[in-house]
Length: 191
Image (cartoon, rainbow, N blue to C red; front, side):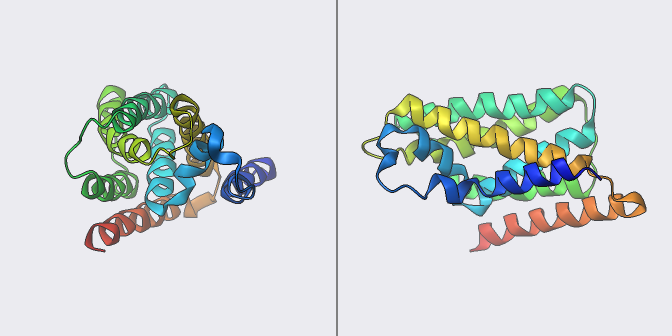
């Protein structure tokens, strides 16, 4: 187990406190965007699960799958900023959390293009939710860049967590984490 990865993971999880510590600086958009993915458990769980799943798929999927999420999240974000509608966004977000958790829990292995498509669909809804919450005084492109940067950091947390060595308990820990995320998605849907 590498302590540098654990430290980096903990530092990334501390970002919400940093992003929200300076009231009044969000008018530029970048800080507001950087903090937004940390404002809801649904976003954190989904983005970490994407990195986790990509890591377990291995190979080029470790880069392609999170990149597909970021690219389609940008599209969804721009749609939200400009008021282009997507149906049932909040319901879809809860379902994406549940689906991503199940993909991890059940150790689903699919070809990289299929995985990229699945996470891309999920990303559209998460991006749209971020985009429609653009603060009134924020610059749209800075805001989008901020939440994309935070998303990349959360994907990296997921990749790092999946890379930790737990010995024989690794597979069980992965399944438990996946089921926990799936149950959280179901709870979000019902709540």
